[in-house]
Length: 485
Ligand code: ARG
Ligand code: ZN
Image 1 (cartoon, protein in one colour):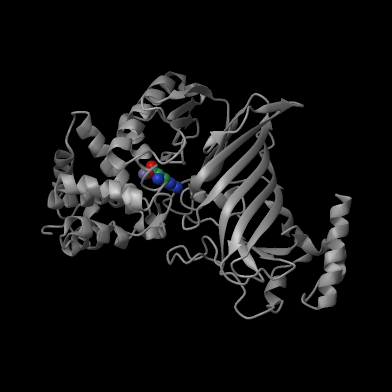
Image 2 (cartoon, protein in one colour):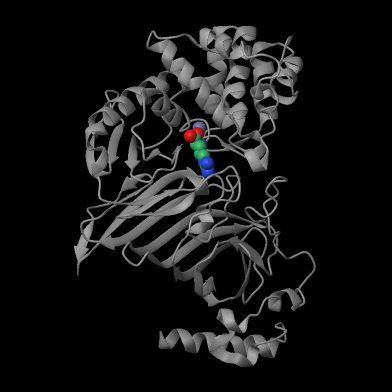
């Protein structure tokens, strides 16, 4: 603590001598404190050079302040402790990033919580908060293309995003015994400073400490055995495949676990709040069977483990958290399990670059439900498609073209159902062999990457040798019931 204060004071003096800080330099150790950086303090400081300020958004036209520009995160190291009784989260997040331009200043996304200290490459940085933007001014200009490391020490009571739209409650959601952490579309910022947009995927290391007796379920694999001392247990998890920020989780609480491998050998972990004890075996078995089946249809499973988690928060939805799908307060049926596991390919391995393309996640996962039904010998995708197509021309589903998901109503049923119907219309048009080859080629070519609708259309045309503009125009982009395509 003491040496930290000294280091900060020294840096402040140096900055003052260089004349590159407009104010506060004489405040010594308090320069990095929130109180010493009133709103606008950084804003009024002259930039060190033109064009060195990272944009406050990553460039998604529908979510202009989500994510940030000027850098790309390689890895997050989250070292956090949570006390459910006090609802208190505290710790340090390390961010390894690469600058894609010179940076005198850049943003992170963070909602609520108190920031204590930020360093960039080990040197104290100034910062200020403006709404959900955390603006960081490193002591020294970061050169474009160079790697840099940010450390943010912070604490407070994390609160989910709630009530503002049709998106429901999401982010860090406290439960009776821990927290249910499901953050689509932009709730990572409710619990850690991040570049909170799926266009910037990164690797994750988690070191999470909770009261002994509780479990922590994060993404990827547990590293070593959890260690307990002084009434607290620390869990180390690592996700070693690129992951979108909304898929990161540290769901905590009491859980009953079942662990093993699928028939094809993929590690499988099912975890349920004790209230859902009776659902554990079915969740485990079905998640394993479905993961193995999707691996034959969509291509090799992209991650290190599969499974599912049922917690006791009534979210009214499930989320496809990478390797660890979460079901919020209900016992999922096979259809939803098939949906969330299909997202491991469509959404998680292949992530959208902008939210308007959400049908690439939800239309595909919905169509996967129909494929699962067909595989099981229940209704066929064709029959399910026809059932939906029977809706009259004034039905709500035709009003909303699914190819441009709207920010205030992202998860509209059209994005799911009419998105799925789009794939069936495509399958009818190009035939089963090309359609299923297309699904596998799509997942292989963009594994762990980011995708757009244009890229999918181009690949479908290339593999089928057909002009598909009118089909996608009618199904994805035109309001009203498609009648010819
Ligand atoms: N992607 C999830 C699913 O397909 C839905 C997430 C809904 N998120 C929300 N904030 N309402 O099941
Ligand atoms: Zn979905």
